[in-house]
Amino acid sequence: MWNEQVLTKKQVVVFFTVVSLIYVYPIIRADYAYVDDNWRALLWAGSAWRDQGRILLEILHKFLTFTGGTTNIFPLPLFIAVFAMALAMTRLTFWYFSRPDIFACLVVLPVLCNPFFLGNISYQYDGPGMMLAVVAIIYAVTCEQKSVFLRGLLAAILIAISLALYQLTITLFVGLCCVECLWNVRNNVEVRKILVLLIQRGLQLLGGGVIYFLTANQLNISHRGNTVPFDSQWASIVRGKFLFAMDSICLLVNSWSVMLIAVMLVVAGAGFLYWLKNIASLQGSGYGKLTVLVICISTIPILLLCVPGVMLFLVETNLDARNYIGFSALLVLLLLLGYDLLGVLWVKLRLLLVMPILLMFSFCYAYGQILIAKKELESAVAQYIAYDIVANKKLSAAPIFYYVGPRTGGNWLPRGHAAMTYMPSLRYVLSGSNALLHPQFMTRLGINNVVEGDHVAFDAAVYSPVVDRKFYSIYLTEQAGFIVFKEILDPEDYTLQLKEK
Image (cartoon, rainbow, N blue to C red):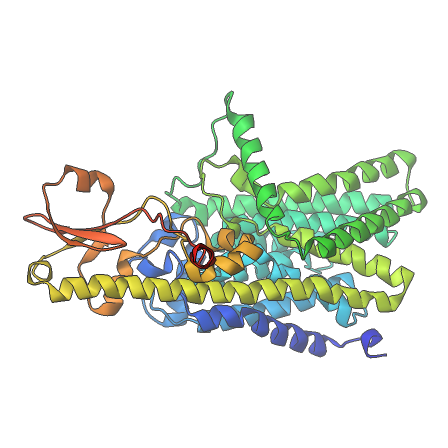
C-alpha cells in the first residue's frame, strides 16, 4: 500500500521541500512589511540585531545581499531557509524513524507548521534567520558523532549559533529533549542510557549557553533581556504570563475544530499511558525506573512551560505569537503519540494524522488573506494622507511631519473580521505590536518626511488644525506638522450595518 511504503532520504527531502513551499506560499503572496520590516527596509537596522545579541542575523543579511545594509531581497532568504528547514525536518524524521513512511513525515511537520510560528515567518528580515535558528536546534538534537565529547561540543556550538540568530529557540531544544526522553522509553532503551542522555543534553545546553555568553552576547546592550525582579510580585507576574500563554493556545479552538482537537488529546493521552507502561520492563534498577517515571510525567508540564519559555521570566511584557516556538515540540509529541498508538490499533488509522496537518495549513492560508487585507488597508490610509499633504500648499511646504498613532485599534480590520471571528487566534498572530499604519510606509508614496512622534510632544505643541478626516487630523506648528490618528470606534463587523436595516 502507498501509505505503508518506506521512503528514501531523497524522497523525504523532496516531500518536505514541496510541502514547506506550499505552506509559506501565502506569506510570499502577501508580501507584507510586518512591524519591524517597515523601518529595516529603509536601512535603519544599523546595529539593532547586534545590540540584541543576534549578530549572526546581521552577518547573514550582509552575506546574502553583498552589501553592508539591510537591502530587502525577500523572498530569497525565505526560500533558502525553507530548503534548510526541509533538510532539518528530514534529519529529525530519520532520527525518530529508521524506515519512515509518508505519515511519519507528517509527525515532524509542526516544527514548521506551528500556527504561532507564522508570527516569526511573517517577518521578511527576521523570519528566515529565525527559521535557520530552528534548523540549528534540530541539528544539535540529532547530532550523531560517536565521540561523546565531540558530539557534545558540536551540539553546544549549534545551540550557540541558534542563540545568536534568535534566543527564544532554546525552548525548542528543551522541548525536543523531552520528546526524545519519552521516545526512548517507547523504544525500551535501558534506564541508565536514558538518564545519561538527559545529563548529556543538560551539559550541551549549558555549554551552548556559555559559548553564546562569551561571544555574541558580549555585544548585547538591549534591556529586553532583563529578568523580572525576584520580589513579592515575581510569582504573580510569572503566573500571569503563563496563564496568558495558555489562553492564547486556547484561541486555536473554535466550534468546528474542538472535536478534532479533543480527539487528538484523547489519542495522545492514551498513547502517553501506553508508553509509560514500558517503564516496568526497562533494564535497570527499581530506583532508576522510578526516576524515569517521574521525569516522563514531568515532561508534560515542562513542555507547557516551554511554550512561553524564558519570556515568563523577562520584564518584556509583550508576549507575542512569535515567542511560542516551543509549541512546536508539544505538537510533535502529540502527533508522535498519535502515530504510534494508531499504528498499534490499525495502521490505516494513521491516515487521520492528515486532519491536524490540514488544520494547520488552513490556518496559514487564512492568515495569508489577513495579511493581504492589512496591507490593503494600510495602503488606502497612506494614500488618504499623501493626497492631503500633496493637495494642500501649507502641508506640502512643511519640512517634517510627526506621526502620532492611535493608542488602540492597531489590528482594526473590517475585511478580516469574519475570519478572525471564526479563528480568534488570527488576530493574536497578527500581533498586538502592529499598528494601523507605520510612518515609514509613507515613503512608498513619495512622502519622505514623516517620522515617528508621540502624544506627549503633540500635547505640548502649539498648533493649528488644517485637515480633519475620519481616521486622522493634520495639524501645523511653525516648525513641523502632526499627523494625529483618532481612536477607531467604528464597529469592525460589516454585518451590523445590514442588521440595522
